[in-house]
Length: 334
DNA sequence: AAACCGATCAACCGCGACAAT
DNA sequence: CATTGTCGCGGTTGATCGGTT
Image (cartoon, rainbow, N blue to C red):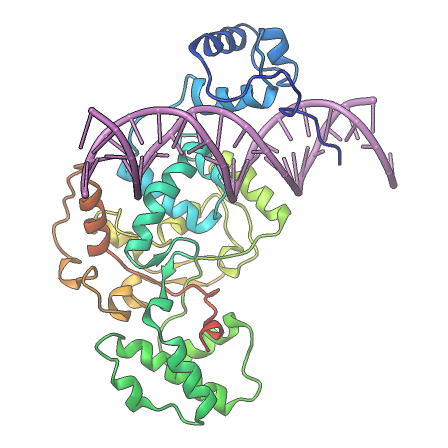
């Protein structure tokens, strides 16, 4: 495919925009609309490339741009959408009126991402960072050196790791020993383990869409909705159930505790059950850390928007709940 | 007062998608 | 069908600012 020579043309100005340049661009677009970005700079009398003009307009000069701090609602939306869409900043921005993809991307990288990391959450997978538990060496040594999982070793770290997780690991190992055809597919594995430990199926928060499906999702985004996606949990992702599905996405504490009833199990058209987070793996129950005090889970249902970063984090921590996504590949830890 | 450092964010860069030729 | 041109996206950079030493 061809690629336009753009900003590498000599003689074109780069760097920060001056108020005069902004005025020229504003004035021209108000009169003629953006039209062809390539020819716009020349017509508007700007020594800039079209790309630079488009960026300046979409990220800064556009009249409908909302400035200022992100609200909790916006932040919550960003996190929820990111858990579904990943780094599709433009798709996320499409659902946040007045916010640009660049602004959201910056905000994610400078605020949300760091906060999630501090809370022990992988900002990519939106899952607890199990690597922090350092169970990989434990598990791998058990697998490699012994046919039996030495639970006494595990007991020694129970102060750090919840018995539920140990039970999960134990079940995994016994499954592997009993069944030489132990599934390599983590999704199959997930369901087997779930049956073993009598817990409900876990809802997937991760999926991989084909480019066409991604495009469809992004297209739907402008209409407010993702479309059909490859993950079974999302196969019936239709406009009519989008909101319902969305509220069952991971929430890191931005939903008012009094509203957690929206996390009740939901049955979709595929009879896939979405379970209340309380019934599944909760991060609180997996690892005991100072930031995951369960005592605050049912605390005040009133949240005061102070705009204080620490309070946001504290609030997040108190409400932290998790599910293990189907895409979680525990084999990486073995 | 100056140097240093980290955070923030506007702007740039490279690439892929897609329409036009 | 191949090539070209344009647009938009996501990742990255670098200037600036405020806080700390």
